[in-house]
Image: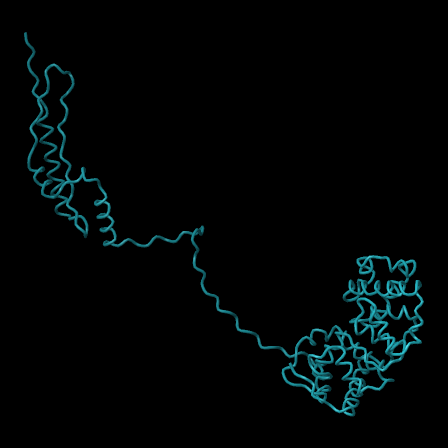
Length: 361
């Protein structure tokens, strides 16, 4: 963020005069005045902070006419006052400050007549106002300027933001520092005029968002008029940021969509068959040599009993297990084993049939 360089009082006065003249072309030359009691001026200062002048006047009138008297306002809750001041910015804080002012005045005087503040010196008035709870620097300076006619620059946060953006005051200054910095370039008779046009600029809806963008380089009061011209010009369009590259989203586990099965190769099929054969229990398998011997020998037939009416049981056949290698099942060995098994089964079936005997006469 840039900063305003140190400037002589004569240069400050010239720059401020040019700024006021330029802003009067936008917002007019008339400066509003108030004719209120001390207590009402204090309440108006609470309403005016960070808000346009006309809205503050309307809100104060709404508060004074919406309640029976000041005593009813003093005993009201903050939420009730907030609803009455709703159009204003930070209406809840303004309701709290209005109630704090009335409570302080009533507790010190048992009335709402505080005209004695007009007879105090600047130093005495500052000490008195600092005793009020929740009072702000702007409220204090505005009351001193309107009641005592003191030479103070009344700045609130919105006005300070606009002044920093223009380069009118040093960056990162607080309200007291910025007010003291401008005091050397503004005459006492010009304070009301300067503060009014600066308030109009700071609360203008067209420029409020622009004030949030900090300057890119260091500023001085020589840059004020250029910055004002830049403010009135259409905002520059910032280059569009490149769109982020969207990476493909991989399917997560448990997704409802199922991926297509991978194609099965010959090698994978052979390995799968080998794994199945290795998992078969030992009693159902036999070595390759034993299977070849058992296939060549035929078990003897079992004769049927004469006394039994049931047909003879079929002899158990030997299970032939195909020879399995790591690469898969050998085609030639599987065919020869199947042929031998069929021949052995047929032989056993024929041998198992017994010739029926002739009945005795």
